[in-house]
Length: 365
Image: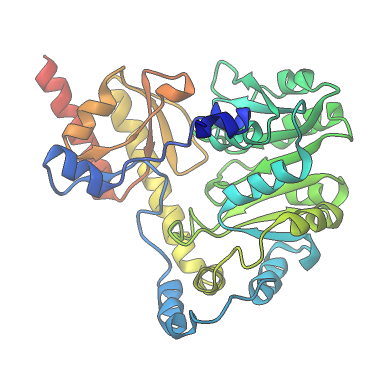
């Protein structure tokens, strides 16, 4: 009997997440070297030196299971955020928290309202439970259309995803817009606010989402150590929720889902504000440079509150840049065939991108 006949239909028809290409794969396929990767929104400065030192010290402890409750990390993070320890849930990256939300709340026939284009894992985790994603198109300026999202919520809506700042556009919404959305949000809907890039936000009216999680039952804010803290390879994410919601996710998660080294590195990185500030400064300078140089080459760029830019270049620029050893993220799968997402790199990497684009223009003239 064919195995596919036994697979749940909602898994059989699911398309797997497509990550950005690693440098090694690109260089092997194209026979090139010295490539730069500006595709996955990683920290171009690398991890916190304090985290690296802590990892070295903890290396001889890997024969022991990790602290399943992440006690030290939980205590320190709660203090930093001004929340109760019982409000925190940790995961193997924020992606696992998305899975836990789907596992806890969704069944076939349920609906989930989400912005689109946005993080690719939202529809994947929804479909993986046999539920139905209800994508709401972004506004003309590539931002969340919160009034339209509120109108899309119906009787079968169990969960609502917001992504602020939004990935892959970098756009964000402010407190006033958010309050208007909340006024229309029914109490029956669980609200998940993905703030993976919150540490890069520069707008002064960014919503006070953690305060909302304290006062609105069924609210969770998702964050990560992968971006500003530079720990993408260790996979540490966390959620801040009301205690009841957090308790249900704790029941659903696997034991020891955050490994010992990841916990140690996250705790050390949390205390390295100097590295985080260097990262913010590098990001701000990179955005300023690229938002000046890219339009000069004829490319449209959207304002960003994240560590990447949405750029409209042309339908085949991903491949052209790839052949020049510059890896960016193509957005065809998001319905944006003429756009790419460019992570902010070091000054040298940003200049490498601009030089590659200049060469492409010269070759086409």
